[in-house]
Amino acid sequence: MQSLPLVLKVKAIKGKGRGKGLGIPTLNFAIPQELSITHGVYAGRLLIADRFYPAAIHFGPRPVFSEADISLEAYILNYFDENIKECKLEFVKFVREIRNFRNPQDMVQQIELDVKEIKKILKVKSSL
Image (cartoon, rainbow, N blue to C red):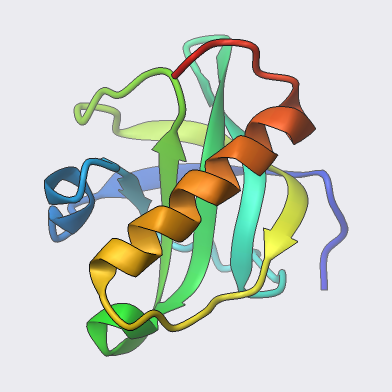
């Protein structure tokens, strides 16, 4: 297992669009072969054009959607551009393990709590 913080170059891929529909649009990434960390939610950052953007990062399966395949996606806390092709992704701190939820709305409630925690970890002061 790799230690944190960890920075990797990633390539954006097309997601299923569910995050946008739930009010939490994410960028989806091809999983780099060298990525070897615990599945879970992480506080992190995206480096795009020499600027860092705080993000909630999900790495692992999506049991609420009955999907066991592994995904890597980031919800950028104060910015979103679905035209990003490549960037660097920094994993700063592990926040929690992957959980199953009764429904997507319960998952969104947990993500809102995760974002509050991630803002504290990354010292984000904006209201976004």
